[in-house]
Image 1 (tube, rainbow, N blue to C red):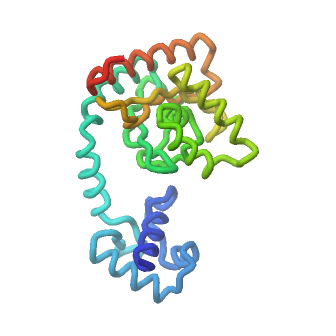
Image 2 (image 1 turned 180 degrees about the vertical axis):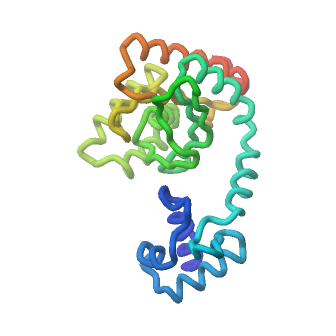
Length: 245
């Protein structure tokens, strides 16, 4: 189990922002706090399995191709993504902003789809695969507001400081009543997002659609316009997934 933990720790570092060109074994050793001999042994095994690869010229390490293979296989099993992608593209064209699709994975949500708008030169850009704590952002709050209360409470207990929990619960109640969430500068200063949850045919939350934009361009009128458009998108997506609202 220790070897698996260490391999996953290495994989997370290799996947982290800023290591796209690769990272040296010495830098990896510092970040992992592992001896070079131990790290070299683990990397050798990871390379053999396709979990890591080494550039023969620079000697730097990067993620191996097998992660993409597994990721694409997992992505392909989420049939609803391909079903609703046209609606995400339509929404992006309507509001001329970046559109995101997020999925809850325990205490975090992961961005699994992004539609960029070419007409908007000043836009948010969050990477696919980015993980965000469930108590942060419009997409995550609306997912919480759509989940069973016991599940929500467990997440609150683990992520929200005790002195802030009651205020957070009140925010989630308010979001639940509205049917959408709005976030300003929670994760990145100067940015805003508007999110709605999407559910499957039996009512289980499968993710959230959100619009990401820069705040300085967000007037009250434009914000309401985007709220109206994302709610229209939610209705069309729900119909495609077999839920009539």
